[in-house]
Length: 368
Ligand SMILES: Cc1cc2nc3c(=O)[nH]c(=O)nc-3n(C[C@H](O)[C@H](O)[C@H](O)COP(=O)(O)O)c2cc1C
Image (cartoon, protein in one colour):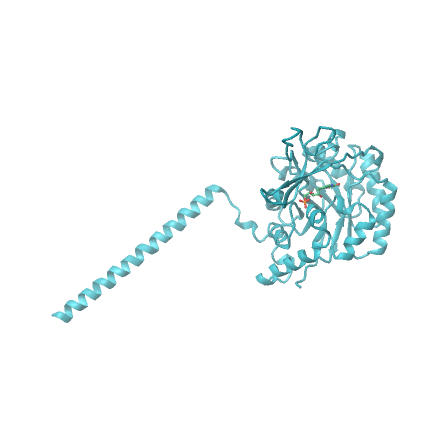
């Protein structure tokens, strides 16, 4: 097995595979299980100071399958943040750090647009001993109605202000988790970094309508005959996540990025590293295939590294970034390659003609 360890913002991950915020990190018990199975880190389900305002619906998930197959390629959810009491979270986090001091534990937090609320949750949660924060500035459904989540993350001025509040009191690294539901992801990510964010986690889910039930004519997931657009995740979003990670990495060389979106294999993860991520997070993949996929993820990434003779992750982080350019440049490169080929061909023809001439001359000499 290759060396999969990496230190990011001072946090030592024994491997770069982190369970992303969501159902896989619902409480301390399941987080402990994921550590036992070998995950390098964990971002818990997002929580806030007042869980009483969080009321989930059932159903809240919908699956998109590949045509003619049972395989789930896309997954939509309208799940809110955690509805567990805040005190329970503080107890769980404290206990987890006591039992697993060497595993990375990141608290995902979200609050309303109030400085006192953000600073209170940061001050109290860091007392539990967690290693870092992930600010959820990106949940696309439900919370924006309360001006939380994506309602903050899509507005660079608010991102800068809120990350600034958090950085005033945080004594541990802070990642800002960004929404993909913006035209140019480098704008809000840049605002977070200007305000002092230590890293960027991306992407959260993509606002979506997963489908309409053709029997009932109702949108899915259907709750009392109705629905709302939800967050799309799973394999189908990976190309969008890769594009956004690439753009933020190119705009901010060396910045730590936790790559998220449709990662289900170690080979998927390798592509995020090649585009500048230094850790990766898995949410839907673990929900659909189980926490046990961690063994496969590690083996596959290790195989990729052995095949390319990479000794550690830093050897190839960002290695594919220089190969992105403009379309105009692609056209120029193609023309230059064609011209070079043409020049080589005409040189070859010259030599052939010359060889032919010599042969002719020689035979003439012999005949004479
Ligand atoms: C059911 C579900 C619940 C989620 N809850 C949260 C959450 O509480 N906080 C958060 O930051 N992201 C949440 N996410 C988003 C994931 O962490 C992740 O950013 C996104 O799903 C893309 O990654 P994936 O394709 O590996 O799932 C949730 C995703 C799903 C599918």
